[in-house]
Amino acid sequence: MEITPRDEAAVDRIRQLSEQAGVNISGGKVRRTSSRFCLSVEHGDYNGTELFGVGTDRFIWLAYRPNGSGKVRLFSGNFPNDGVIEFALGEVPEPKSEAIANTWGRFPYGVEYVLRREGFELKEGIDGVVYGDIPGGGMSRSASLSLNLILSLLDANGIEVEDKFKIVGMAQAVENDYIGSPCGQLDQIMILFARENMGTHYDPKHRRVDYVELGAGATDFRIVVLDTGTVRPGLEKSTYKIRRAECEKLVSLLQNDGYDVSCLADIKDKEVYEKITGQFNGSHGDLCDRLKYVFGAQQRFYEMLDAWKAGEVETVGRIFREDGIGLRDDYKISGPELEAMCDIARTVPGVLGERMLGGGDKGASGALVEAGSVDKLKAAVDTGYPEKCPKYKDKYAVHVCKVVEGVRVYDNLLG
Image (cartoon, rainbow, N blue to C red):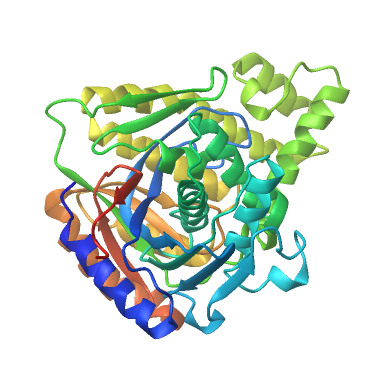
């Protein structure tokens, strides 16, 4: 498999980090996992909707080798102050404990915990170095790391898991059950199943993934991620947790009132939707707002999917923008810096659509941009964002992304 220049640069950096940390990775493998860009429906996974997105070329690289010691020893170039995370297999801190709250080590601890809980017999530890360039909010850095660690530790122990959804579930469990972050499965699915130059369509009802080509003749466009430079706390500390609880509360209220629903995605009929909002808007207006976003996003979903298949990128962008307005006004999951980026992007001719990305509050926004307008967008951000958000004038970044496969492994890069 041909290595890309960015992979070469990342591996060179990892070699430097391994010497710095005293972690021997000689002769090992390098596993690269992608980020993701959700086109529709953001926050749809825990609400039961269909999902559509792509893998994007901001990555986490893990260089690792079995060490024969029964211990895991890992160093992160992104969190060097944590030092080498070292633990014996089967000996990790308790889930959701204070001992893990403020270290990136909660991810390898959680991976080992979940794999053992799921019945996998781990005997072989690894030495490894992690390095990534995924922005910290909006592109699923935590899901990419969890997947990478799970796949690498299984590989080191000679264990194959054919059911990819089993991997997805374990990666979710690392965050839900060990860390205490209430994420759904959108991020893990969009990364693990991602294919180069293809859209990924997930149907939860049939537990099926289909790949969707962009139609011929589409306007040449780019996916642009607008990193606000803000630091987002884990989902367990964010508005995401509140929104998820609100959606679950509305489902419970509806069930108690005799509605046959298991999640908000079950409400697809306009007449039923109007009956619910008419009944509950007075007493639970905020919950009805959350339903308004989910209902609208579902109504738009197949229009976007059909537009993608037909190569009508302008329509995809318009719907992406409409989803963003719903996330801002009805789901109320965005934040001032995220919307500052969106406001700037909306002024640039050739920007087809923009909205916040990911869990919300902080992190990154995203845009679909005609190829000839990318430089104009960058210039507008460079001028406008420091004025709107001076606190982050030296921290923001603009990432122009390609659609890539979610997982790649290099066997012969470390000597």
